[in-house]
Length: 283
Image (cartoon, rainbow, N blue to C red; front, side, top):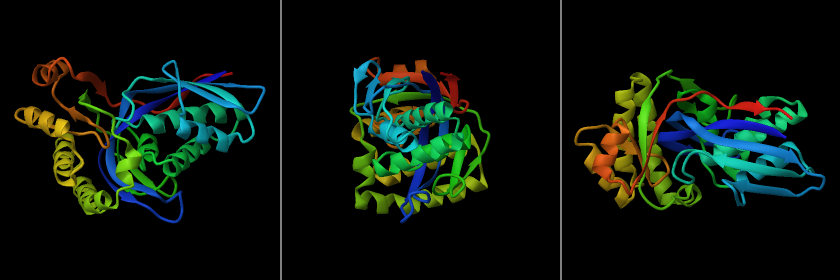
């Protein structure tokens, strides 16, 4: 039995890049690696079946399963996934689960950790998950994806900026696959995402990150009515923007301030930038 942890990741703005090579497919953009994420425990079975639970409930976990199968073909596992963050709310939980599961396998097999990241990135792209979360998680606490794809094909710069943020989940899940498969949405945000990356590289500060992220949210057309309403309340005195891609927002307002503005019915949590993925228990 092996257990690994991987932090979640919020993308602030992005520009999707699709090529004929899954290794160079991904996105440009900037994001925040979180101090909370996903724990995965992997235990090998005697048969070739793959079973998974998330927070105690049986689930498909297609991206994590795909990652494990590519690293250990023909072998069966029981996968227990414990998620500390809201799922399908723009916090990179599918990438985090896949990376953690992959690290369990590479630890078991004695293979390179980088194999886990590659397998997780490929599984994300193939199954309609996030295009840049794996690269962003690898890249550092507050990383900028300046060349799309998984490292070493992709290139990520860690600004080293540490942040404390409050996240609010405002409504139903937003499925990344549905948004990223809409050609109209993608064309609308590509140019804006590139512009944000270029401008951010000239001035890498928390204030600039919020400013560009807020502008991207407003111009991309991705925000739900719940997100737009929450942002209108928070932006009167605080910086705030949408978690890409979720029915959720992040802000520099404190948890108490956010609750006062948004109400007790909203799921609110305090987060900060965090460390990288790691194996926490070996077989």
